[in-house]
Amino acid sequence: MIWVTWRQHRAQAITCLALFGVLAVLAVTIGIQMRAAFGGDGLPACLARSGGAGCPAVITSFVDRFGHGVSSIMNVPLIAIPGLLGVIVGAPLLGRELERGTWRLAWSQTVPRTRWLVAKLGLVTGGLVVFGAAVTAVMAWSHAPLYRVTSRLQPVPFNGDGLTFTASLLCAFGLAVLAGLLLRNTIAAIVIAYIGWEIPTTVVALMSGPILIPAPAVMRIGCPAGCPGAGTGTVPPVTGHLGDFVLGVTRSGGQLVVSYLPASRFWTEQLIQGGLYLAVVAIALGAAMWLLHRRTT
Image 1 (cartoon, rainbow, N blue to C red):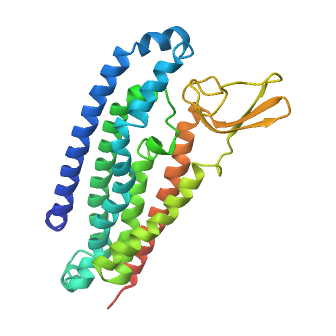
Image 2 (image 1 turned 60 degrees about the vertical axis):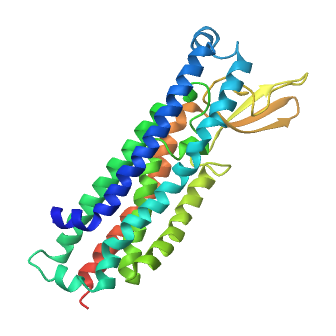
Image 3 (image 1 turned 90 degrees about the vertical axis):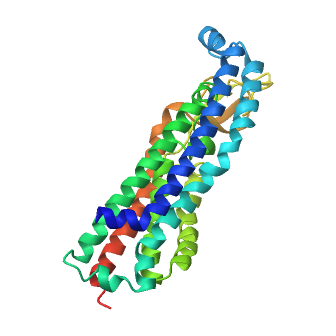
């Protein structure tokens, strides 16, 4: 099964290796530039001395350059790769067998069809997990200086960090496997699975905005004489803590009401959003295994 799986999916495996190589070179290049600028601007000393309050202009310049400038080159790949790669790898796993009629040979051997599918899913899924973990690790290393002065809870880089990237990749893969079984056509399965993947992705995007599970934290700041500069884009943010993700600031009487996600909420949000993706994976692959076991023609 290992040899057969490699022969059938070696093109996708090589594509993953090449894609990771390109991302790694780009991430390392940006990471080196970021570390050089971080030290050259004197940010380590400022953070140690005042927690960032003593050098807002320098931090803002650094964030504008790397958070909204150079490193934004990575945003599009991190958003596009999970869906596209997942459906391209998943759709042929069953769709190609049914489309070409090779299932008659593959499923009539001594290996039962359920065991055949479990073995293939285990090997391919394991490869995708390794790919996702490797991409996440290299991106985390690259963005480490930026994380010290900005929030990791912003939609980007949040969607390419922690568990979310790999879970999103597996979600697209699972939907594509099921679509291939139902449609018996690889191209159609790729299209339908990608559209289906957009549904949990949209839900996750909403969870990163005003609709949050769990609810955002709220801070009330007394401000009877006005609070100049206390907006969502100030450095440090209005909460006074670098790393908090400020969602909104409204005025209520003599107070500012700040809605935000504390920096400590990062892994909680990752588990919630990653868990949503993984629940979809479990349902899709469970349905595929059940349908394959019942298929007789």
